[in-house]
Length: 158
Image (tube, rainbow, N blue to C red; front, side, top):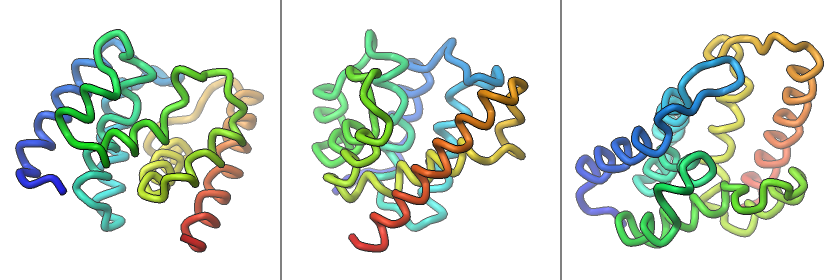
C-alpha cells in the first residue's frame, strides 16, 4: 500500500509528463491529457491509490521506454503498481494480438479497472474528439467496444 499518496501521485504525474513529452494521440491531443483523464476515471470508480498511480503511468512504457522501465516503477511505487502497468502495457510485444492482450490482463485483476477506464476514455469522442478517417475510427471503435465488454465481463466474475 502506498503510504504517502499525494507525494507518490505527484511523482507519478511528473514521470508521466517527462516520459510522454512530445507524444500525441491520433487526434493530436497530448498523451498526458489522456493518462490524466484515465486516472480521474479510476478515482471516480473507487480505484485504489496503486490503480490511480498505474493509470498515470500506463502509457509511459509504450511511449517512453527509453526513459523508464518496470524495475524503476517497481522501485519507486511498489510491486502492485508495476504489475498493473505491466499487465496493461503491450510493449515490448506491440505485435501481440489485441484479443490475447486483453485476455492477459485478466491474469492480474487489479489491472482490470485501469484498462476499463483507459478504454472508456478512448471511446469518449466528446473528450477525445473524432478521428477524421472514418475507416480507422470504426476499426478502433469496434476494437475498443469489444475489449470494454470483455473487461466488464471479467470484472463481474472477479
